[in-house]
Image (cartoon, rainbow, N blue to C red):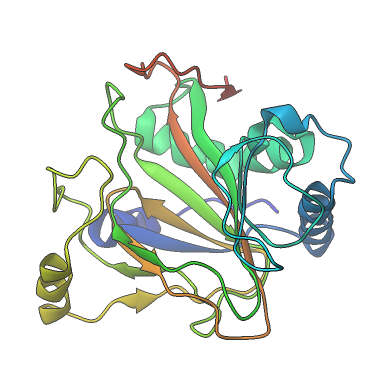
Length: 252
């Protein structure tokens, strides 16, 4: 799909800290990505599982696993799978021209772009972890990654734990003392005094652009519908990690 953003849309993003991008996947692309992530979870993808960071969700007689490299059993009950830039199908998706345009606007035209993480997130039917409110930040980096594209592979609804955000919170860190970016319950209460959170309900194939400092979180899944999504955090490829982590260049 050939999509470009208007000046008005960029203004909305800069003011609000988020922007719904609408449909960014064709039905064929959506079906292919959905099948591929199921195959990865079931061990049928033929990919290099030693490069994938995988975390199994609690359930099916298992506790929630740690998030480590390697396959953890054939199940659709995974919570997270990271390093999907090493899967050719997901890499092709995250290189769409629209996302190159976004990176040009945010980081400067023709800046080489890496991804901090290309991550599948899942809330299986009737459970799925609650994610407390936070701002995405990583204190070991010499500069902040600024944008994330979050794409729904299933319907994302209030009932199955869609992302919820507080608009206009991207301008400063609320709890800079916490390196994880999580904010306190008192800080959440202060945000609620100025307005209720916005629930980002999306249809499959729709995406939302988020500034990484926009406060966001999600509830568990109380429905029979899983909530699968793919999230990519784009960063300047010149970013240096104090921990020596290397990042894959995804756009030259």
